[in-house]
Length: 82
Image 1 (cartoon, rainbow, N blue to C red):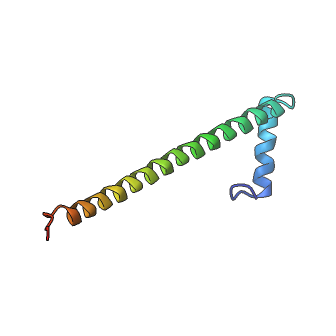
Image 2 (cartoon, rainbow, N blue to C red):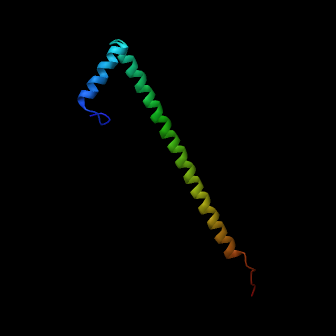
């Protein structure tokens, strides 16, 4: 069951595709669809990776600023000499 359609519906879709495009063009169409789906998935994964890297970089930057502020607060007072 592909995409929640029954076997009969799948068979009907394949039958209509054969009638519209002919037996010779079906493998070419399937190959083009396969390559297109691969490119779309690759692009989506690449975008996800870039977004995750940006998020990690932003989180690191926030932590670094927080630590710097804490250090500045701790050492910003005047030094008392004895």
